[in-house]
Amino acid sequence: MSERYILFVCTGNYYRSRFAEAVFNHGAQAEGLPWRAFSRGLFPGWVEDNSDLSPHTRAALATRGIPLHHTGSKRTQLTREDMERAAHTIVLKKTEHHPMMRKAFPELADQVEYWEVHDIDFADPAEALPEIEQLVQNLIEQLKRNPEGNFLRTGPSKA
Image 1 (cartoon, rainbow, N blue to C red):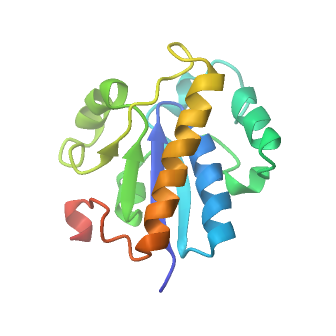
Image 2 (image 1 turned 90 degrees about the vertical axis):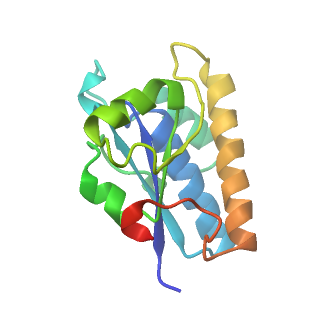
Image 3 (image 1 turned 45 degrees about the vertical axis):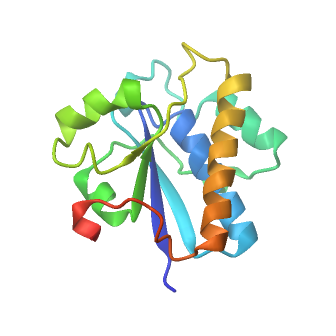
């Protein structure tokens, strides 16, 4: 089976989506799954500092022994091409991101999976990052049982 892609999306592609991407890639590689993740942001320019990765994400990955090469090297804007490349897209917080998705990609906004993981202004990283980790581990477990990913909801371009 050829490699397939999961896309994780959050606001800035700085904290939550990058953590999910790294945890997924590390776990999928360890399990020998033909899946890889990449991540994007709806508004990657909103981050006030010039760093490309949240220090919370960096520290959490280090604590877990997950190398940084499992996440992208910089914050990246979400494009239609990204969504078409992905077999499945997961957006990290429905109440926050669904309106943004409807504005940016109205025909695709309801074709993605939404989680409900709070950003740092509503949840401490010590709470949010383990929640993401558990959701990603659940996804990996599902893919181990069904490597084709037939259980995943897909957009119209992948039907």
